Image 1 (cartoon, rainbow, N blue to C red):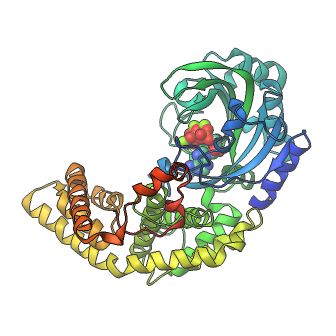
Image 2 (image 1 turned 90 degrees about the vertical axis):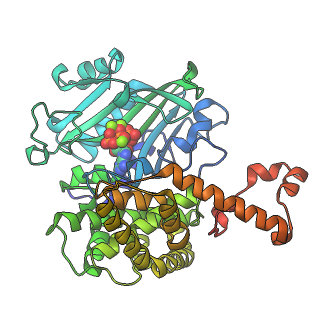
Image 3 (image 1 turned 90 degrees about the horizontal axis):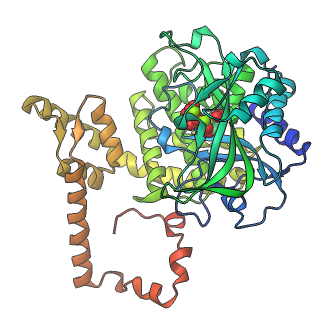
Length: 470
Ligand code: ATP
Ligand code: MG
Ligand code: MG
Ligand code: MG
C-alpha cells in the first residue's frame, strides 16, 4: 500500500470517528496554562485538564493529530531513522470511558486491517506486571506469548512531568534485517532502527503530583500516541521518516539548494535531514506565534533556526535559504494545518529576518571559533573559556548550545559556569546602566503590582521579537 502522509492522517482520524470519537483540531505548540512544559510534546499534553477531571471534555472519546516538538531528541535527529524535533502525533483518547480492551483491539484493527500491515511483523510490548494487557494481546488478539515483550519503567511507563501517567503497551514493527544493528541480542526494544516503535498505548490510571507521588485516578483513561511519520515509514516501506512522501519532497529541495544528492555522502546526509527537520519545526513554531529570542521557547526556535543555518553552510548552501524551504513545508502540510497558509507571510518574514541577522555574523563567528580551536590545540586546552563562549553568543549570535555542539565534534568542551558568569556580569552592567540612564523610563514590576493577572497572561516571549537579554 502506498498511502501518503496526508492520507494516513485522514484515515486515522476517520477510523476513530467511526468508533465514536470526536476529531479535534491540533492544539497550539504553545502550552495553555501549563508551566510544566515549554512546548507540546505529545497528543495528550494539551488534553491534561480532561484527564485530571479539571475540565469537562467535549466528548468522552476524542481523536487528534497533534503537532509536537521534542527538543530532547535533537541529538538523534538526522542520525536515527525515526526521530525528528518536529513530528505529528496521532492519538485516540478516552476520558473515563473505554479502557485497555478497546484500545488494544482498535490499534490492532487499524494497523492490520485499515492500513494493511503484515501482522507477523508487529510485536507488542507491555509493562512488566501488566498481565491484563498481556492477556488481551495473547488471548484476544491471538499473539503468541514469546512475541509479547515485557519492559520496565523506562520504556513502558509513560509520564512527562506532573500529571496523569500509567503503564503502556507499545507496538513495534520489524522492518527487516537490513535495518538491524546486527549486534547479538538485537530484538524488539533494541535502540537501532530495525524494530521501530510505531505506537504507544498508555493506560492512564495514576496522577503524578510532580514530586514522585502517585495516586490512582478516579477515572481510568486511555491516551495513545503514534507518530504519523513513523506510520508512513512502515506503510510506505521506506528507510526513514525523511523518506516518506511529504518530507522527502522537502529534503529533495534542500539537496537541490546545496547542489548535491541524498545518499551520496553520510555526513552530508545528516545535514540534509537535520535541515529538513529543523525547517519543519521552525515553520510550525512561528505559525503558533513563537518568535526567536534568548529565552524559553524563543530560544528553542532560535537554536533550531541557527543550527539549520550552520548546517546549510556546512553543505555549501550560499545565502539565505530557510524561508524558501519553509514555503515547501507550508505547501506540503497545509492540508492538515490550514493555519500555515494563513500565517505564511509572517512565517517567511520572521525566518528571513532572523536568518539575515545571523548571516551577518555567522561567517565571522565560525572563523573566530576556528581560531580559538586552533589555539586550544596549540596550548593543549580542552575547554573553551566562558568569556570566549559568551563573546560568540553576544557578538556573533551563537547560542551556547551551538558553540558546544561545534566544539563537541572535536571533543572539546565549554566552561559553562564561566559562560553563565559572563552573562550575569553583563546583565548587571546593563541593569546599572539602566538605573543611571532611566532606560525606557519605566520599571515593569510597577504594572505587575497593579494588575497581578499580567503575570499569568504575559505572552511577550511569543509575541515580541526580543534580541537582548535584559
Ligand atoms: P522512541 O523510543 O523511539 O524514542 P518514545 O518511546 O520516546 O519513542 P513516545 O513518547 O512513546 O515515544 O511517543 C509516542 C509515539 O510518538 C512513538 O511511538 C512514536 O511513534 C512517536 N514519536 C516519539 N518521538 C518521536 C520523534 N522524536 N520523532 C518522530 N516520532 C516520534
Ligand atoms: Mg524517545
Ligand atoms: Mg520508546
Ligand atoms: Mg514509547
